[in-house]
Image (cartoon, one colour):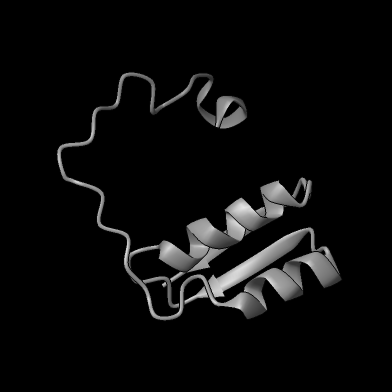
Length: 74
């Protein structure tokens, strides 16, 4: 973000809506097994709807010390 915009574009951002994470099997145990077993650098989450699984996948990568990225495609 800083390389492209030269600044943090979210600095001072205050959300106006309540958080509404939803998903279907967003925290399924298979995600933990896959992340811990494969230790990927990039995860692509297709069909993110409200982002619950995308956020969970990113949390798992962080928890397992993986400096990768999660790409959400909807």
